[in-house]
Length: 346
View 1 (cartoon, rainbow, N blue to C red):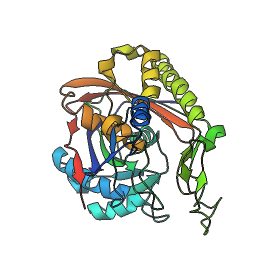
View 2 (tube, helix red, strand yellow; view 1 turned 90 degrees about the vertical axis):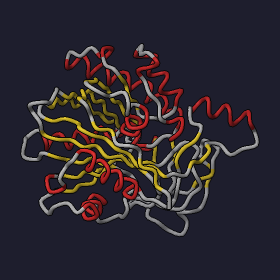
View 3 (cartoon, rainbow, N blue to C red; view 1 turned 45 degrees about the horizontal axis):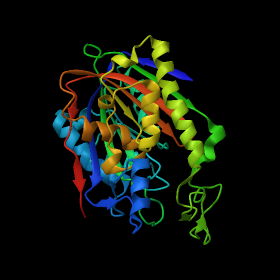
């Protein structure tokens, strides 16, 4: 497992963009089934629209955050885009966003293909560059939205794009601690099997087949081994937080907020109880936004903690899922800029 400490950089701002359209979690006349599903997942509704790609949601959120921070676009040295729903197979969506934002030619742009754990990985990659002092201002955009093929709204997943601003500032920086890990033996626990070079797109790719959760899906839709993923999440997340705390001699119970990947409420509540955390330290955005993949930690910060982060606050973020992969980050904020949520309508 990778343990990393950064001493010279700070997270200075976070923003998020979502579709304005609200989609009910369960559309069924069976009220008992609907109630049971919502109690298990914790999801009442989510944001859904096939009108927007992930980059469409990230772009206005980036413009708003840059304005709120008072950054000059000429000073932005790097842009990372973390997603499993890029605009194109090529070029990198980071390059598309670079052009639309009007950033300088000296600004590097890079895609990272990760889902649930992606925000922690993206922030870690960005901080690795910022730590040197030669890359001083970075945007990390993370999220997922419109899928590769038209599909009905999924019960679990909502759409969102987020932007995190990181800067080099050794004078004000507090240490940031990160632990990353992966278990590729479980790569097929969460998978979209068709459309890549392993299983290329053909006329059969959109044929529906029954999945283990009782839903019909085609090969360009995500499917998961539910019990395997549940067992992985409730075991890996608390272990990762405890290992990070032990490695860097941290008292994790002294932290103000714990922002988990918004997988489902039953899973996250199990993790919370294993760590013996108070309810008010664990915010949830999944109730109204669903599982938003790599956007879930920053989206939760924007929508649930935006008015609670004045002064200095200590946060732990922990994400886990597709890969299988996971990441935990412990960081301190000081008057962090949290932009107002951007809601997009066609």
